[in-house]
Image (tube, rainbow, N blue to C red):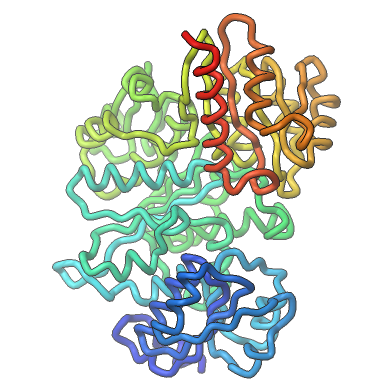
Length: 500
């Protein structure tokens, strides 16, 4: 069987009859099942639940669906005797089905490995498949992915943002229009599956970046070390540019220790003065000294901090994302002038340091996408003295360090979430001088209405209210987007009631 799987490295290989079990039926699981049935494999999809549309489509595409508890290995899976298990990213290493596959020597793939194997379905004019640019990090992945794709497109390249950003890589690979570059956002979950891959030595990205690293998803990975190891896989076998954050020691070590393709360059970025293989900031100007023939003596101007502020892109962590994206696209020969012009029209996603309103001297900032301490710290540094709305599902992460560092700069804190005790305790231990207010579910009506009521009572004159929860949203909201939208709705209701 190993010989057959080793040969399956092309869309045009013989996939017929290969028995593949697909775990999970979200957008990723369905894209895997759809791809495999198109290739002629025999596919069993197993999931504990499924959206009605996906459940209806699975038999239509020629796969079989088994809806059952996966707390143990289902009999249907054992009877199917799969040659390969393709797992959706939500399945952690500790999951019983993942352990069963490993213990029985069954090949374990994620959707990224499958996409790499069949990446030649649509090729460029020269017969080669699209280049891959990989992007990961604890925070800023989606913004940097969107920036990178936007800048590449401005440079005349057909580029598709895909992966963890919401569009499965397999959908991009199979798009009949074809692409020059796939800009692939990777979660630590997807990277862990890449790390288990027998094909690991053959996945060769053009360029890659890990933007930053801080503890996150520890329950899924089991430890900080395992999470860090998964993130480090992003650089493995990179061909042209390993882009790293000079201000983040963990990403520096990753690049130093990475097993890359011979000739790959390490390209640093931060908000300081760049060295001759870096991108950085000099006198308020973002510059490139890495992809410049005279990089030892001069630099190429990309844009200015003033221009970025005018475009709503001036927060320090967003500037870092812009430098990282610029490094990636410079590795693909996009001109500095193209980067400059494209940045003028770029807008951030909703719920990423989004200005909701400014009324009666109060600015309301929605950074609901700050779902972990590292992201929240970046927001707090961008808005010192803000009334900080914090809390939710902490995912096993301690907020103590965040509160002791960036949290001390808050003007006040409003703690939300079902499990507020650890957050309140962190303020008591590390920032007792910060006034803290608590929103108790069920006692005060809608959570965000109460947040707005408290915030307007706290601020006397001018100030900023910052929703940067440092936590997931599922304890009280459908998603981080739902959390942000409810915040915005409450703000608009207050504006309407308060008048001009």
